[in-house]
Amino acid sequence: MAGEYLARVGGELAYKPLDRALLASVVEQAVGGAPVADLGCGPGHVAGWLVEHGVRAVVGVDLSPAMVATARQAHPGCEFREGDLRELPARDGEFGAAVALYCVIHLDPPELPAVFDEFRRVLRPGAPLLLAFHVGTETRHLTDWWGHEVDVDFHFFPPEAVLAPLREAGFTVTATMQRAPVPQEAETQRCYVLAHRAVD
Image 1 (tube, helix red, strand yellow):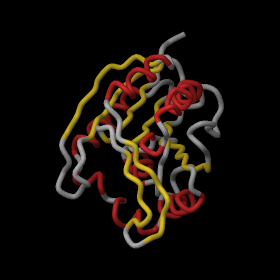
Image 2 (cartoon, rainbow, N blue to C red):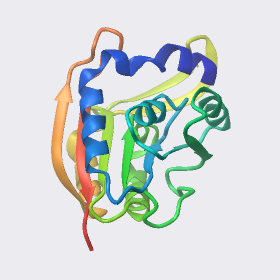
Image 3 (cartoon, rainbow, N blue to C red):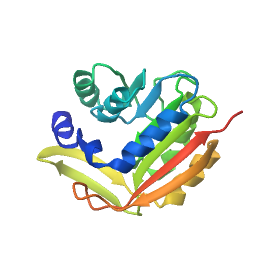
Image 4 (cartoon, rainbow, N blue to C red):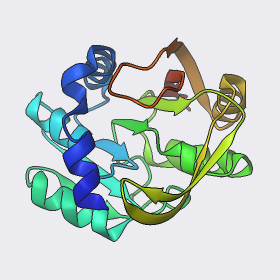
């Protein structure tokens, strides 16, 4: 369903001014001219936006080969890699910033500490990280999504269930924010976390 996802979601930043502002903040705080990572990049629309707004090098990472192929075709100015958040295909300290929008929602809660350790590993000291996730305690399992057969879980998290392992992994949380959905979105409360990798 990668093509369907791009068609439905690829233009979402046009009606999400808060997301654009937070992404711009991450770009401004990126460390050392290093590439910016888009973790769980899906069809690459956020990576594409970053390049369009002045980031010289963006690396998107997604578990789905179809999403990566779609992203490469749609956004040839970015680099895309197949990879797992639990074992990122990146060097230690490769990235000067990272965004991870609605990708940790596909992880079981016990996986968060190891994933945040990986985020820390691939970021430079002081680099910003922007996370977004759905707020709550439920898990939604889909077998049909926009007419496509799928087998996917969406985990909702209380904010502290994300903030605690993030801090333990060596991040300083500098801001959190919640918002209601916009009309074009699923009706869930959203949480954004801006954090920075600790300086050793």
